[in-house]
Image (spheres, rainbow, N blue to C red):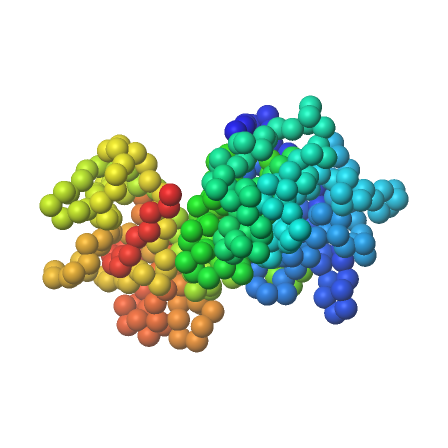
Length: 367
């Protein structure tokens, strides 16, 4: 399959205004994007409305939508390209497969309508990538929720879209099916040479899949930027979310076969994670939730915790819940977040610039 390259970055411009009753979406955003842009925000923030406007599914939307040299909408100039002519692929919460067609028929529906010269992805590639070969002759009604979403994704890709929009594609799945299906969506970032916008209520889901993050609040753009950078900002609502946390990089330095552990170097300090079948020297990305980090002014002498590292306190901010504080730490120039009680912060007299020890209860490897 083709991979994205710097030459394939697509400039997406969206200056949009949409009124739906008392709700108003007012977004002015543009960037040269490739890979996956996560779209996050509370319920009613306008995430799905933004995607529908980009796809041309909201006739009341006014403004400008342009991807590269393709202008899909410019209200002032009377330009409005119909949804089916925009080259946008969309996957919804429900798969919306055609019930009268088997899986092969659903996959071929859009593929057959694309001129041969414009087919960047083949049916065989998508079937192999999404592991659909055993499903081709089955009816949609016989598929599990995760299988239906994989087929819906395959159908969208085979229409050869210039832009792929994913509107909470895993929201209707139970936790087991979500875990089975999420790896296929993670591959989007690594495999496809088209820009992707991915809406989700799950911050962890976007952390696993996205490169950049677009934060919407009350119909407006609250922040946009590299995902790792936004996750570490305590001035944003992201830090108040239950899944708040930081993403850090560490180098794998060794394995402990006796204890089934792997060791990593983080700014000269050691982190331990479960034994990984990864070559020594590799750089790994780690996800550490703020709720899994406690603080101490001194290293504990006796503790069951394996990961205790020295950090510098950078900033304190309200955590969005009564009696709680979010603390931003720095270790080797990388950010780390901790959520603690206000009482603990006062008892330790925490302030910016002071050294503290981070007691990390859990570390998740991002694959």
